[in-house]
View 1 (cartoon, rainbow, N blue to C red):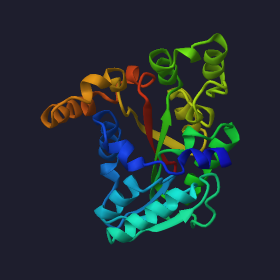
View 2: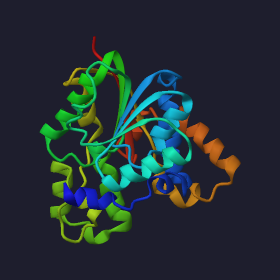
View 3: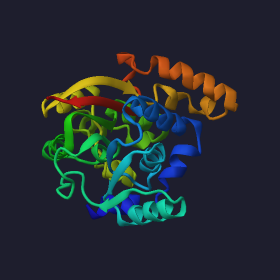
Length: 265
């Protein structure tokens, strides 16, 4: 846990999602997929809120937002940003596996856009999903993001050839983890899933899957092109991406995936 908190201490999540088109498309796609469920007065909880890129936007829409973040440094930044921008929301330091401070059946929507990147055991992943189930109202909506282990293998081939070894790829394929000493800290604290695994996790813990999207599509593999688009080209590419990102064959190759599900009544 300390290693995970250290990974995100000082991290600028806002800049990550805005400094390049290839990262902005992740944010734009997620907001597009969530938009049917977000409106003024809706109660929305974000588990793993980081510095509030999503939570603050939910609040700007008029949602009643509860943001939960594990890293104290990120909590502090989120609170400062909310005060500076005169945005009202509730902010808690906490672990997605236990949000007992949030009332049961109190939320219309719950988004969990980061914690599953790091919950390495099946028990922890199930605890997080069960907490979402508990706090959602009947027929409430959950959005859960994950990082594809197939994409990570491709990233190693493209950027980190020293990690292309039989042992590393076997561990990644079988367990969704990377423990090799040559790996960067993000990979060592990470958990990387398969699309089918996440759907099964959601369905086996009280949810009905409504949609599954390749949040980045295959764009990360052509990042040098996407990042050099003009604003109008980016918009054209985004429009194309939004029309195609639910194509099942894209799911494993996308960096991030997003599953939207409804609490079974």
